[in-house]
Amino acid sequence: MIPGSSDILLVVDVQVDFLARGALAVPDGDAVIAPINRLIDRFAHVVVTQDWHPPGHVSFATSHPGRAAFESVVLPYGRQVLWPEHCVRGTAGAVLAPGLRAERAELVIRKGHHRHVDSYSAFLEADRTTPTGLAGYLRERGFTRVVVCGLATDYCVGWTALDARAAGFKAVVVTDAVRGIDIEGSVARAMAAMAAAGVGFVESAAYTALP
Ligand code: VGL
Ligand code: ZN
Image (tube, rainbow, N blue to C red):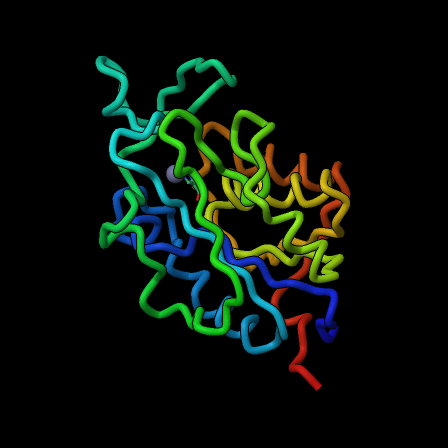
């Protein structure tokens, strides 16, 4: 496959805090960098996201006295997994992975910046109503297919791919360019939900160089 002018490569949350030794390290997360760099070379258009939380963000376990990381609580917008503090805006853990060749990214979407609402998805915050603006950006530029890679399969990648479908885009997840956190079967659930929503799955080797 040769990516065309209506395909966008969406690189989700490949940030220091999600890599080995990071505050919320995704198992084997560093392994996505090499295939993503190869994908970046093959796509004419690249968009990158950053998880970008204010201090004291509602998704941090430390914001809920008596609660521990990886427990969930019920918030006004629904169930929220509590996480270790991660990707605090402007900190070293929030920067893109040093080895990621992101310089050709045409847009960087930052999400999760509202203190009282999380945002796994690059399209819609966890209240399921506040848009990030990404759908409008993609539509205005004529992109029709979103090819998703990055971290984590069961959270930000999965929600992003599902919301891409809900917003009317074709969506593809690059299976060797994603890794999951996997809390109680969450990777399998995310994969099933994506398949049911018409998300395609492809290996990065299927994308050949730009003509
Ligand atoms: C993510 C948990 C919390 C992700 C972000 O990028 O998948 N997961 N914040
Ligand atoms: Zn987060």
